[in-house]
Amino acid sequence: MNEKVNISVEFAHLRLANPVFTASGTSGYADELSDFTNLNNLGGFITKSITLNPRKGNQTPRIVETDSGMLNAIGLANIGLDQFIAEKIPILEKLNTAIFVNVAGETIDQYVAVVERLAGQAAIDGFELNISCPNVTRGGITFGTDPAQVKEITSAVKKSAGQKVLMVKLPPTVTDIGIIAQAAVDSGADALSLVNTFTAMAIDIETARPVLANRTGGLSGPAIKPIAVYLVNKVYNDVAKARGIPILGLGGIRTASDAIEFIIAGASAVAVGTANFIEPACTARIIEGIKAYCSRKNISDIKQLVGSLRE
Image (tube, rainbow, N blue to C red):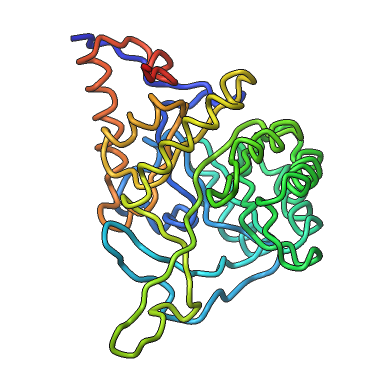
């Protein structure tokens, strides 16, 4: 047993105390989760999506449980940039962990406007670019499904991010996620996060109608974990390993074992999402479990575990 285990990680140019984040959209703006767990014990915290203007989101019902997962169609509901700066930045300033703001929009100009305003905020360490949004100026095609659009939006936002870390969140439902990852990295992404949710549907057989008011939603939770692990490993091998780009792996993580799978697959850090709704303090248990695993395996530094998958 190795009692002295270093689980701190280098993530782009940030030094994180450990490799565990919260995933965007599952922990609000930090104050919602702070009564249940000490957020300062996290490696990083990612806010829910922020858009230039406030959004009410989709009609209810917009969350439903499924077998081994959850469907959500929140519709990027948020308080908007101005209110976020006025009310939430003071809360984030009190945290002693890496803070990433998830940024969303309908046009590249909207993304750039949000990042420009937030780039000067000392409390923010980086941005997570949500490219699973439809580009209204290009007929509603999702930014993240077209390599050319990925390059355009990543390049534009990178110029506005200043010294902050720019992490691009990849959608999983593309022909080749390696091509999308390469486009993001070539255009200035400092890190990648994957995967986002999978578009899915649940039907009420009594009414023969979709359960969600939005008809479809994003599937998250344990049901998607094996696919997410595969995609992380693919992006690690295709792009990230050679370029030295860190990956934030997410998708169905509930336990330390789940997190370790992602790290072995190539993730430098992991994010816990849906599990926060079930057990808001699960991140603390996962951090301790990672440390115990490394100790049991005589791994002195967690970086030895990253991408250690054996063929």
